[in-house]
Image (cartoon, rainbow, N blue to C red; front, side):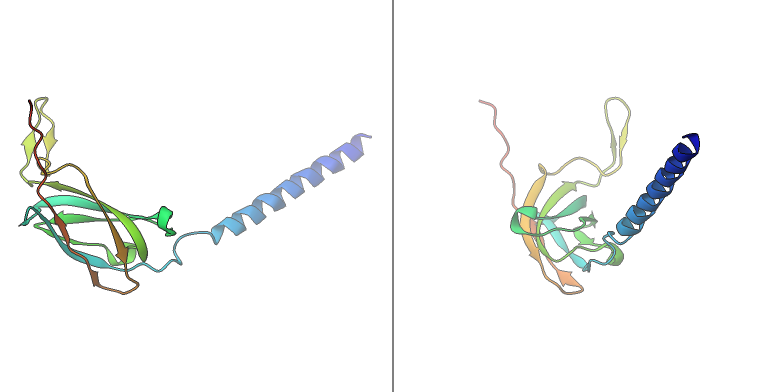
Length: 150
């Protein structure tokens, strides 16, 4: 009886090993590397002026049928450009923009904020990114009304 139990145990170990290897091989082909990405660049303005510093986050709009990896870009002196090897996938996107004045300052607790103070609340815009290399899309963020205390 003990010999049969050992054989069953060895079979389970072998079967488990085969299943793990098969799973690893199956998942190895599931990466996002095969998805075409496209470079995107342009200008970012706030109230008609170039945004000194900031960030853009490009998220594929799942509600409009787009999927794939997101992308990001840094704003410098009103200009942004996605990295070629990490560009955006084509299709509908939700772009989130953060803009700052670019003037470093220290908080009351002494923490250095190198990108400066926020110029506007986080801004979102829906865009459709074309399937073409080197596409250009400019973002013109309108002046935001300041909240008045009554």
